[in-house]
Image 1 (cartoon, rainbow, N blue to C red):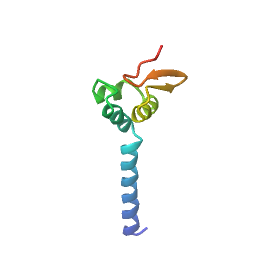
Image 2: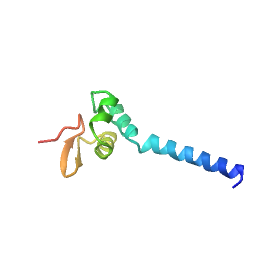
Image 3: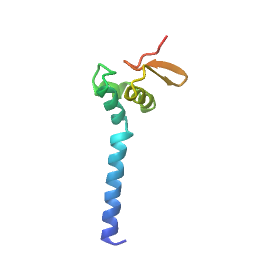
Image 4: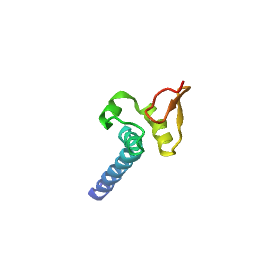
Length: 85
């Protein structure tokens, strides 16, 4: 490979990682939840407490302004992420 090809591959890799980080990472989901005021704690606390699989549907529900969301067959409140009884 020549230097130009390696440069373009590197640029594409950086752009792809940036897009992943901005839209599909755990940090992106936490930012969405915090931005919509659906969690009163800190972003660090939220990242440490729950996994990415739980954050994804929560962030989607918060973004769409839906009061509850489903995760693993249970219903959770979008405000705070607690199980709805």
